[in-house]
Image 1 (cartoon, rainbow, N blue to C red):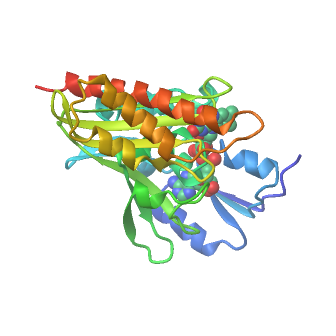
Image 2: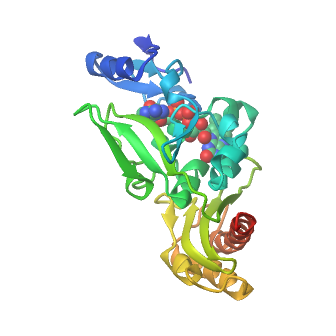
Image 3: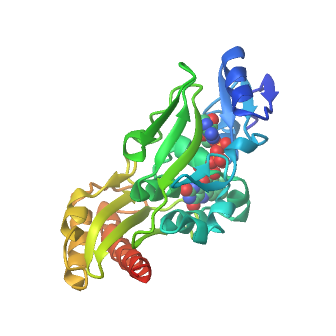
Length: 296
Ligand SMILES: Cc1cc2nc3c(=O)[nH]c(=O)nc-3n(C[C@H](O)[C@H](O)[C@H](O)COP(=O)(O)OP(=O)(O)OC[C@H]3O[C@@H](n4cnc5c(N)ncnc54)[C@H](O)[C@@H]3O)c2cc1C
């Protein structure tokens, strides 16, 4: 299908210019980042913007910056660059795990962390990994011109919904820089390898001793209402003696029991729950092992 005609295309070079253009232009105006999701929606006429504001020339939105105790990933940072930045992003390895297996090479060369979070597709990998690692989303509000920082838990709403309003620009995703013995991991299972998963699970763990978790975030995606955390899995692991394998299995099974899954023509709800438990065990073990490596 041919896309509906797009009346105007603009390619600003600064955030200020991009925000100004949005305020000036008439009709339906949309930002475009990697175009990996938006172009499909335009081509299938799910959406028909009159004007596109391309963020690809806005250098301020690109790159990974480590300063003033914060690890900051610009909204226009591509998956390929996140996947290649494991040493910089430690202990937020789950983000690199996700970025390294999103789509194919072309998608990883174009797709951006900001685009993925704004789109918030139900099974997208980045929202799951960002939910587990506790990112803080920085947004420029179009209505007030002010910058707002929102914890990922409050940013992600239902499926394909976020706390963004029309014309807002996602600027960056921030994480506290930490030397704590922490680790995180993301794993997915899909019908097609390296594509949007059926279920994806990510975990972030901080240790207080070699065998005790001081902080745990357990996130699951591939659910009909968007990514969710499992409070029960987190509760079981927190302060438990995680050298005992039983707690790890118990936590993964608790997540599978707690999180509601649905059936579709390809995958049953019970298989989705099985995947949560199976992938959950794997990502807990990997996160623990990464965290232990960082114990001094
Ligand atoms: C073949 C294929 C396979 C894929 N496989 C996977 C996969 O395995 N896992 C996975 O997670 N995803 C997958 N995807 C989706 C991919 O991750 C997309 O790149 C991502 O969803 C959107 O990122 P983008 O940069 O391309 O954003 P775009 O498509 O350009 O934009 C998406 C939305 O975000 C808005 N937007 C973008 N940036 C900003 C910003 N800074 N501020 C405000 N609004 C903004 C746009 O207006 C639009 O509404 C796949 C896509 C394809 C085509």
